[in-house]
Amino acid sequence: MNIFIKVTASVAVLAGLSTAAVAQEIILRSSDTHPDGYPTVEAVKYMGELLTERSGGRIAIEVYHSSQLGEEADTIEQTRFGVIDLNRVSLGPFNNLVPETRVPSLPYIFRSIDHMREVMDGDIGDDILAAFEPHDLVGLAYYDAGARSFYTSNTPVRSIDDMAGQKFRVIQSDLFVDMVNALGADAVPLPYGEVYSAIQTGVIDGAENNPPSYLSSAHLEVAKYYTLDEHLIVPEVLVMARSTWDKLSPEDQELVRQAARDSVSYQRELWDAAVVDAMAAAVAMGSEIIEVDKQPFIDAMGPVYEQYVDTPELQDLVARIQAVQ
Image (cartoon, rainbow, N blue to C red):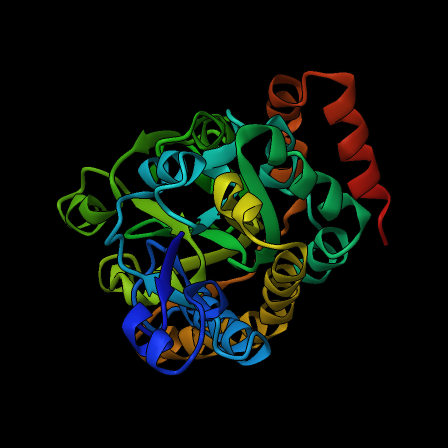
């Protein structure tokens, strides 16, 4: 956390003020791997505007988008050590550090976007946020990242049978690899920047992501079949360095927490609009949007749940989420 004296000591003396009475400005450095204009980036900017207004100009946020401060794995460590104050990250990269985050990262754990929001906005979401604290992080709020679906270049996926033998790029995550393999396909972990050329050259047959990313990455140019299986609805989380949090007064802590919560609805509005626009643009550019029976995909996830929901605590968390209407 960077704290700057808003007026110099000499000016304060001339004004008849002691330096102890001079107001301080708190600048919070926030990291995001997404580009400028992306809903999560804009939401944290909005949070900063709320903080500046509500603190009378004492607190502001500087958002470093487009991985300026590093990729997610690196920024998580920097945030834990207090080098970065705020960080917007998918729950996925936290799976090994914070076991509770594995559950909302599971395939088909959420029945819909509305179900996810109902769960994460309630006591279950609060319990998962609290699980960050032993790891030198303070969980503030959840943002949306939509539903991830498969897209292919040559063979459209109209049923689970069409997954067989196809090679899909996944992020470098054991859970993602095991999920794709359980569907009968072959998972190929690759950096995001290599996906376009890998599809184009036939190294892989397709990939999976949410509609805005399908569009912004231009993957629809080389993979025109987009299958709405919606296998993952993984929330993103905004966390603060515990060391930064502890430097704030209780009043400022409440200002930060409330501004983060108030930014959620703004992010969701932007996200929902981005999904609609992306789907319309994809169709206009020649993509075929395919509806699919999800139940066979869901039924195939049994081994994945057995492997990753491996404690009574996580099993209870799964049951609680599934019970939410």
